[in-house]
Amino acid sequence: MLPRCEILMALCPMYTTHESQRVRTDAMNTEDFRKAIDADDGLKSKRRNLFLLSLLLLAIVVSGANIKEASSLIFKIEFTNHENLQWLLIAGIIYSIVRYYAYSEIYRNELFNIWSKKLINDPTVYYYDQQKEEVKGLVEKAVDVWGGDEPGLVEPEYRRIGLLKRVIVYPTKEEDPEHGIIYFKRYINLNKYDSNWKRKDFLLLLWIELRYRASAWMAQRETLDLVAPYLLAFAALAAFFYKKFS
Image 1 (tube, one colour):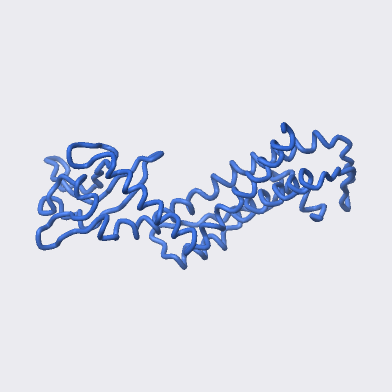
Image 2 (tube, one colour; image 1 turned 30 degrees about the vertical axis):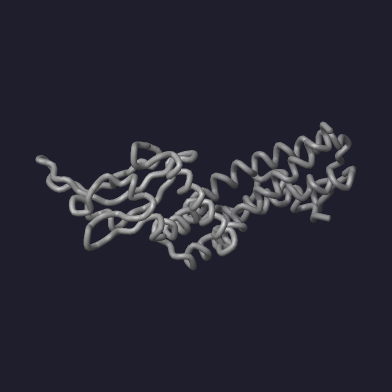
């Protein structure tokens, strides 16, 4: 059984006393990234709230338990309506999911950066031929510029810009009459198809991406650390609504 004080704190996450110790994840290596997650009290508190609420709802739904009374050293609360308590927990879980999603965004983005670097460094996907100054690999069909004109192609990045929308980004520069040389990032849209780069090529790229995502699940424990609260929350909600309306 969960300690009473933890149940009360989980039901009222807005009153928790943790202050978020936000950290920057720019240019992190894997070890720094791991330490950042472990040291982020704000992320841990939101994850803890989500776990507690999900476990409590699962316990009520699966075991058929009926909470009649809960008390602490100061407060004594009697739950006389089991139905209302369940809906209160549903609201608390949804609120915690939203809060946890916001707090975990920088870490989800960093995880994407970690495995996407491995993807773009896969020579079957992207390979820059230094002698010919050309891009080789699967995405060469989508790159319609020559490396001699765009030397930044040697430093590509693979990014997502939306649902199933992907781009390759590389640094470049242009000379402006007023401001001189301007440095910026240029995007190659992988969702723009032509006679060379076709939809089937993009789907193959997504399949390769899926393999790297799956590999990250196995190799990066941080992936499961971040996703596990969502899985537990959705399992609790699914169990509740299945029992409620079946």
